[in-house]
Image (tube, rainbow, N blue to C red):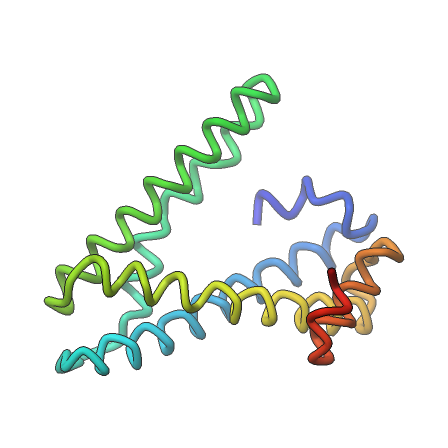
Length: 156
């Protein structure tokens, strides 16, 4: 939510940006929890509950990321990268501990979800733009429409 205030590339409507980014984050987290549940069950994991809460807690380090804006540009970039890597390591370890599957299998699941997350982002940006929540630059809008309509090669 805090990061949405600084996303000036998405237009001047702060309320629209915040709404979009909060809804997108929750949607992505729900989809990731479902995907990882299926992925881990394929490894013979006996799921007893939802992974949603675990994934939310494992990603709690995101609340620290806005503090990196106080650093110089290069320092902020490095700090963001380090925080992101730590966040992924925490997520991998948490999912491996809960499921009892190997960390490599969890990492592969995360990597397999990445293209799905990009398609989800493109579709969400397209919908948010159509609703007037965000305003995308023309070149980004063309890329988003190409990916969300299935023409991934048009985006590149």
